[in-house]
Amino acid sequence: NAGVTQTPKFRILKIGQSMTLQCTQDMNHNYMYWYRQDPGMGLKLIYYSVGAGITDKGEVPNGYNVSRSTTEDFPLRLELAAPSQTSVYFCASSYFAGASGELFFGEGSRLTVL
Amino acid sequence: DAKTTQPNSMESNEEEPVHLPCNHSTISGTDYIHWYRQLPSQGPEYVIHGLTSNVNNRMASLAIAEDRKSSTLILHRATLRDAAVYYCILRTDKLIFGTGTRLQVFP
Image (cartoon, rainbow over all chains, first blue to last red; front, side, top):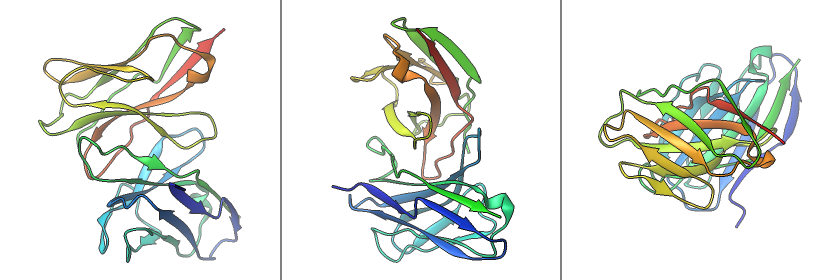
């Protein structure tokens, strides 16, 4: 059981480049989340999904896009990378929001935009 | 979105109990209270959750006020490995993290 898998773990981008952070979970979880964490700060919600085909904005969605075509995958797309997007990105999943809604996190993807 | 308020930092000595407070005065009746912690250079990990009654697990205890406007995470005997940022969160679809409490544990 792999849990939540994020790729890549590290990436350096040039300003204006685009890339996709991949997130896959093998626990058949309905809910999936993308967070970013700037150095010394807390987690900020970028986008979340409550099931395949459904996505919604979080606190800081500008500059990002997501899709949820399957239960397992929730990729995060960065268009026209900017230095302000330098951060550690965490993907998380849970079965449902409620008593058993424990979040499982991936190990994070560290992105640097130069 | 219902918000939580936590102290920025707390300190403890090893093997002493630690009480981490959280205020959530705008909590709704269906919001579960969840606690996560983030060790240095790692992703957050689940600690405990509850709705109305106090809860215990192998990691910690959660004490919830009768009016549910506050809760306290209790680490019964702090170890150096418990040094982390602890987040108190109200569990809804849109899961918002606050700034958390940075716990320092001294030998």
